Image (cartoon, rainbow, N blue to C red; front, side, top):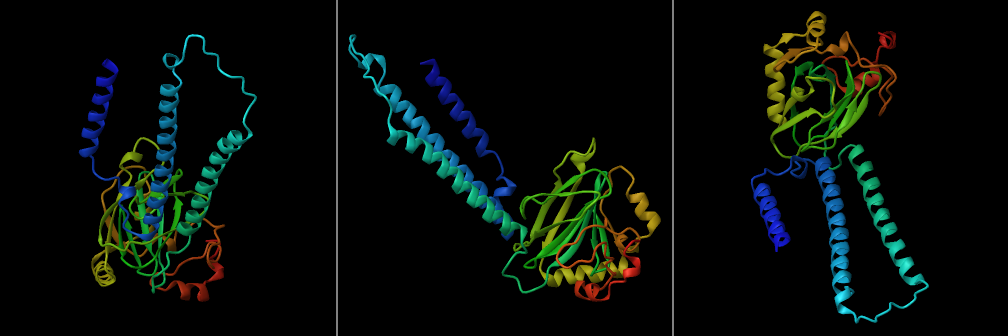
Length: 305
């Protein structure tokens, strides 16, 4: 009787807590990469749930059917050498489950690593670099740099170039896709897209010291027209980013949001050694120019700057 009431209390408590929780951000996706990630999570959860339910059902059935009270006092279980059929079944089922989850994982991994499909525009390239404990976002085509906040257009692929000016950080916008590391000696590429306007939260998901919990940033997705208007406004009103100012921003500590014209890419380019999607090694992106023009007119004399 006590076990029954304890079980009912546990179920009631879990139900009460869950009804007061907001939906998990990763399960409320706002872009194609995020939806793929959420689908994989749900497939894994349902697969594991089915396994758990079947195992517990079999356990209860066997315990009830073959309990000692159901047998006579002189009952002796039969001698069984083994069953090839049963051994094949309980070996094949786990193999099939693992194979199924492996296929789902591999297919989804290739999908989220690729540039999102179904969009007419070229990806918007944003260099996202971390330092203790802040995020720097450089828009080379727009000649803008922001700190701790990010504006992106909807219905357009976003190609993030990730690297770090300090310890390894993990760039993560839960509602738009999975996380990827930003490291000091290389540049990683993360492809995302947002197809729903709104404000989303981003953060560093890797421990980097006492201040990492506040290393967050805000993301605002808006239609392309509004994004273009924001770019014009910033270029008309913001202060230029100087090398001295950038060195000051790199000092450990927490900052609010700030905006500048120009980017640090001109005097502090990304780590050399990255070579992705046609980019030249340690290529300098010229402010205000398109990626295509940069590919054609890269100044090789500055590659080792």
